[in-house]
Length: 575
Image 1 (spheres, rainbow, N blue to C red):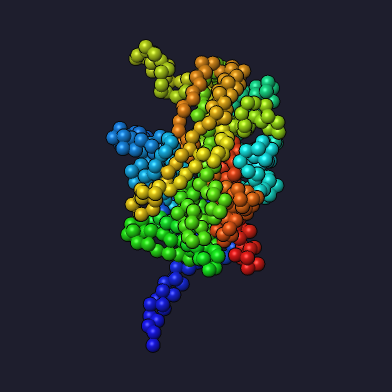
Image 2: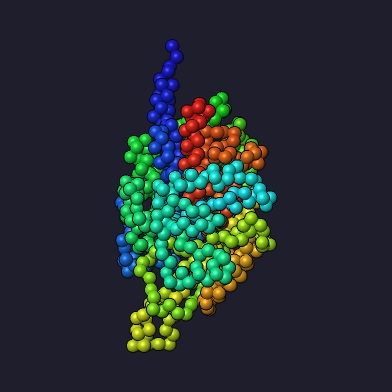
């Protein structure tokens, strides 16, 4: 009689490791996927390669004063020398370092300079994101087809608009209904007021240029709704210390909102320290059946199984996972019949910035340290091409008064110095750009054939760079920005082109792009892999083009829409 003991044990192990859905990653889009799937009644496993994080418990610097940090918030020189990449990240410091990876712990290969900023923990980079949330318009969705770059988006604004609303209501986005054609209005909590200089900028820019200067749409609870209170979150206290983790839940993150909400359903399992190796494809069934992980600590290989899989590992890691998911059917990566997997990587161009001082307004100040900036929505190439480059740029801006630091009293000492520093200084105004970049086949990532990480997974090679279009856009921003500031009476304007490497924007996108044609794209209109439809990709990797708006709220909208579609397809027996 044959021995069936091992078969029985294997079946038990598989049953114990089986779920209705698996989500890879717990950041902005992964947390949203978990929340939506659990709300729909699916037993859901979230795989996170980093450590566990709990709201409040794991915010070690949340209430520390500047003088309570050993280095007053700065990282020591030795640390910077050991971590030249991550220490360049916006908001990185002694108060937030625990939410970022160290350079040597997670290596990759830069064929061209690329600063890959990562945060490996439950909640991912939703703990440290900038929280800016502008909607796309049809200007962005139809641009690739209209202008002949990339491939046509398989959706338009009307398809995603209700899902924007769905995500905005849950996350809590503040802003005003400004009627800007290139930045549609959404479901907003009250927006932040402009201070006196910002209001002046608004009036001048409209009068002279017919350009908008508006308060930004930000993921801050300026006035929580009943839904946000039910999440256990409270009103933003305007501390502007968001990246430490907010004890009030005043800004949106997976740790404060989506994951706790999913947990309350009883359908959520989160497994940290789970480095995803690949997606398991069953040749006979013709679909994906699970995910293979390497335990980050024990290095043990474990397999988990499910009916559907959501890939939300953050754009470049999602590319890595699909490229490493090879089988007899997909020898060059899961879903890669088109050959475009890993290609057309793109990002946002942040190189241009400027700063200046303005006279007047000395009798006015402001009340709070608002954690939101002002926005000048894109005014370039809307409907018709009015420049020598493709695409456009959003401008972030703000005004404030100099504090009691800096070179405010040169040559003064004693009483005159104290008197000078006892009052606020000049009003200052800044601008910086967030520019669209054009997807190109040459901008790509691929797997190393001879180097692996500590978990035996091939290292990712990044080969991404700027082009002439980017250079022209930076030049235009510097010219236009300086003209706008000058028109508003700003003086001593200093302009900068940082020439920073791609990646430092932390808005990497593409590589697993959406499209109508399986021959030129990997995903369909619902973020399903064309040739493996029970796998969905809804993070930045799915982007066909970049637009100029901050993308995180779009990823959340894509995710909710894809989950809804997945449930419908499951009910029909299609996946």
